[in-house]
Length: 221
Ligand code: DX5
Ligand code: ZN
Image 1 (cartoon, rainbow, N blue to C red):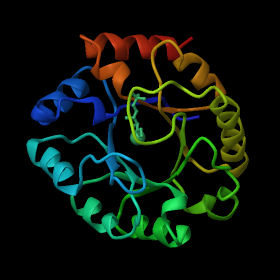
Image 2 (cartoon, protein in one colour):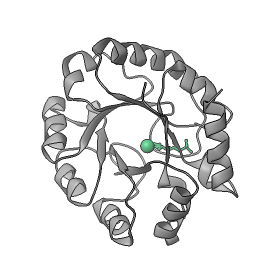
Image 3 (cartoon, rainbow, N blue to C red):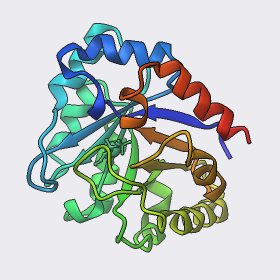
């Protein structure tokens, strides 16, 4: 397994002073910026696009930006996000007509590519594209909103995804997104995750560094 990564979801950040807030969370010890893109079509909410990603890069954010696309269609946004400075681009297989093509498109633009699995989406599609995937992201809530409760059935699914990844021998990240906090992170890591998205648990806390430190302590258990 690779070292654990903590990826605050900026969905819960202060959008009026985003550059500053992202800088603070990185100074507080975060590894990756998780960037949730919602289109009010694939999911019932609307957030931000490539311009905001580009603005964060211009502001001086150099940490990896993990773009989670909850949009349909997928492909037209890939070059735009790559140009805007995305490091990782993940998408939901239900939202792309040609999953293999979308994965190749992301990689051809120099980004790491990933597939996102909703709580009720089976992992079977991985059988055919595992060699083109750098990240497997399991949703532990239904996508669209921050602040929801972790769905416990995701723990078994994480274990299954971990088995698939280990069997492949490929250096694929296993990311978890939704309802992650310092209390449940130990159990989630034991189930196999190595990259942890947390929005409300970090940004709603008064001291980002304290939560992130607590998460790392609980990951070491
Ligand atoms: C939900 C998003 C998540 C969300 C996580 O659709 O993909 O990244 O912001 O927020 P919390 O950690 O509050 O569940
Ligand atoms: Zn997300």
